[in-house]
Image 1 (cartoon, helix red, strand yellow):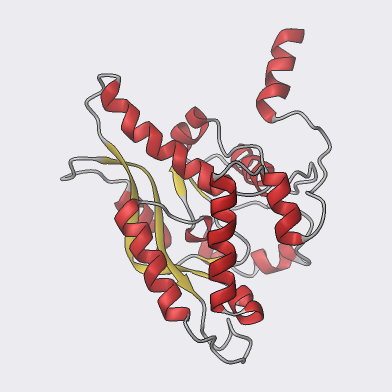
Image 2 (cartoon, one colour):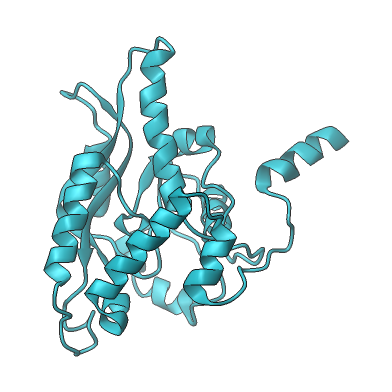
Length: 246
């Protein structure tokens, strides 16, 4: 999805056409931040599994094979209602643009992966994948500019807890794929340092969990107003309005 912030996207995508197979690029102009943009991408997709890869993240080699294996529940007591890759930071010479490796990066990766594997709480940077039917059942990402990945994972975890209470025998989990991680751009850690970025991430999660709204979080994080949108109604409000008019 081209949200207008990446230049020359089509040539870059076309250069990998042989590796990626069938694909298309869609232009998102409605605004509103990451949540609405990701939902738009999902609405344009036609596959059974939706994989959300941020523009500053890179999927590991043979990622599609790993996804198929993750959703193959044979031999498991629980089925996967979603999955994500392990967390990694791209510290290759290309990722660092020839610059020095920030100290503490390995510790960041280790602690993030402990959190992810112990509590099934992946970040959006880990390329979360969800079957399309479950994604649409949950209503997609919340219609907000930040913390949309936090909320989606929370909904997936709540679904896995509620199923047994509803008398449904199937057990579900947020599955974390081992092996090669999805690699996130190191730019934040290079620019601000590992301690500051870690502190800021923890601070904003705490503020959000304490009730601060995504728009106010955006103002604090970026020092500016949240992205404007063409329509202030959320997707479900637009759909409900259309149903009432019919």
